[in-house]
Image 1 (cartoon, chains in turn green, brown):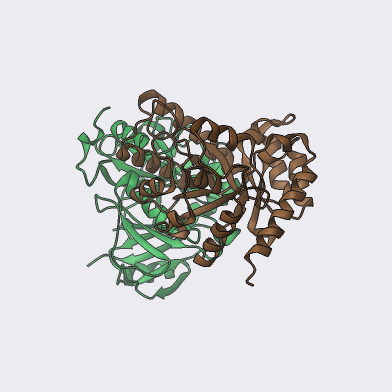
Image 2 (cartoon, rainbow over the protein chains, first blue to last red):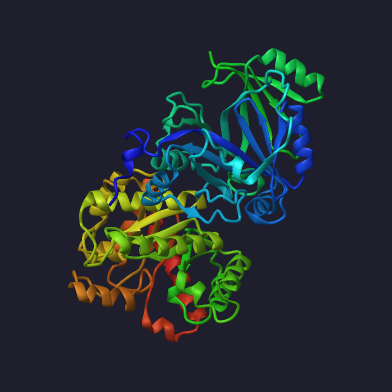
Length: 284
Length: 281
């Protein structure tokens, strides 16, 4: 058997290196796009043949998939608008794929996915996918499938939001440990020692990906549905970002009580029917 | 005990899936354990139709049977078994089951190396998690390397995954000459399902006889030689805080020649009998 560990150390067997993109399935891609623009994102590229846009701000890549076929569409039909995929950066996608398959990663055919380029995809939570991407330095995956929109990034002001801090995953009652086990087993995530009842924050071995596992209320039905349901973004200057977003008419939720993991100021950025975003100040 | 604590295993019943499900519901039971064969063997409409029948029946699916001879294989045989596992997990999920039963390997090709067995169950755990399924590992009395509950618990402890636990089948416990006492080390919350059946023998059978008895000659609790042991087992589980389901796992050739309603009448009597035995005084 091939030793798949050659690309990473024992603590980071997949060679993980952060988040490449988060993909949103939406039955209202235009409305979601407008919301993202209000949050400071710009559409920087359009898919060559699909109703798919790449939005960018700081180091954040968001893909809005408004296709009426394929995985994202299926996801939106079954689960409603939401996060249908997340792409993890890995040093070598082929090696990481082999490693994941050997350990019980459930590889799925990514052909109907957003990229023509073959990107390995694995079964994630609630019908979402986890992509493994190793082209993120000189050549990006977007160079192949997307057309850059001219001038989109020219003259940008400093970003209001510049990085993904956490993905928030809802899990069913009693399944917190199962999901901790899953991410630890396949990707080497570790749980933060602080614990809030019914919640757990886990971090990738590269220190760049954090997933907050939250127990949903109720075991089945709408409330109990598992999935990635929010993204927490970092604002380099939170008070300024909050003021600017308020000026643009974004509904800022109350400033949340700083939690055990992130003793920082937080806002929810809520838009009914769209995916939920949170905004936090940069870690100290 | 409430009838809702009990599930009926479809293998005890003759006939088409639709008739089995209807008979189970008509007998006042609210849960089943299903076999993959029930689904893929559907005469008309195939798998999709079978899944719809299960969903329409409103019966809870307490377990999905069974992935066999999985752990300990290597190379392409392991790859092949992973494909089979995925197919079963997918079917189980479609029916609304949350538990896939995995019986300990009987394969002469299977490695008995504990680390390998543990790794393969961890692999199953990872496959099952996104689908919301749990893995219930069941030591067959004639398993090649894991054949009893203390051995199976040693494996599960090493696996260390929240969604991997044990399925306790009274047949396999008693067939090895073991008693409820032999389960003392197993935390009851790691028992995902308890299967009950009675038997016509009160000795420890030889291996080949075990298989024959298990597949063709099981009885409902209260009808055979294990009745007293079954009462002790259930009362200990109840006293210890087990709140999961009991499934009547009663494969019996005679029942294949009876109308399901008659077999279910025996199942109902078994519930009454167990309840009366458990009542204090």
